[in-house]
Image (cartoon, rainbow, N blue to C red; front, top):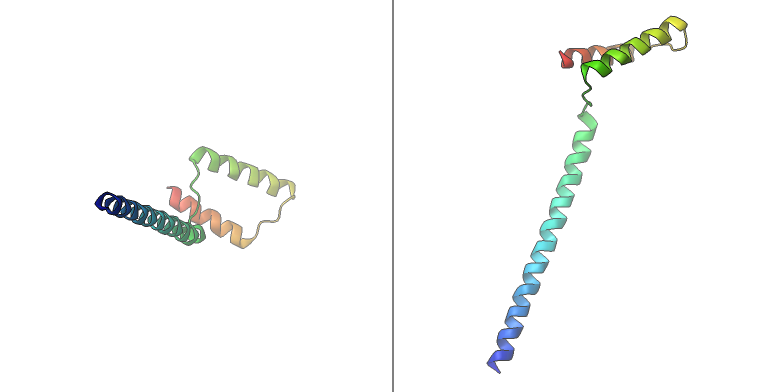
Length: 86
């Protein structure tokens, strides 16, 4: 009878550990999701100088052809990214 009791105790401990591990993983996933949503609002993707230069050249070409009307907001964003890159 004691053998059966020890087996049930071991099984109960194992199930408890499995449940704790599952809860830990769920908590970690939720934490990552919250962090990602919080950072997605304020994160500005950093680009290399080479890519930034190409973007400026293309924008200037479009402006010279008159294809694109640049808003004041776009110019301000570019100024902010320029300041951050330097």
